[in-house]
Image (spheres, one colour):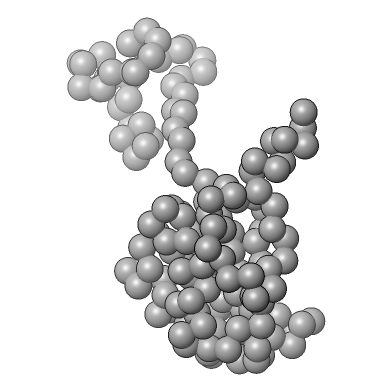
Length: 149
């Protein structure tokens, strides 16, 4: 994607350095080029700690984010309205690191009150998730698509 944004795309296409996967090998005079890409679903998954300790949440987030857990980004936040701290994560590839693995990594470092899914996730991402841990917002892509029928 970065190659598309570099200046001189028209010249690189004209020289044959870059070729489109589909369509004519020239830019549209007024619309330019379009880049379409796909990635696995990103899962926004939060783990609430038992305590309102921002320093602890930040410490846990630093320990679990990549390279700790592959494909995981994490930050520590304070939730004053809930009197708790939270480790907020984005899981970029649940086949490498599942929400259950994120939860266990957090539990190894702090007492956990519960977890939350923000948005949709594939059903397979939550296979093996411990049923004893409260999980708010569990909505799957499959259930959402089925309800549209």
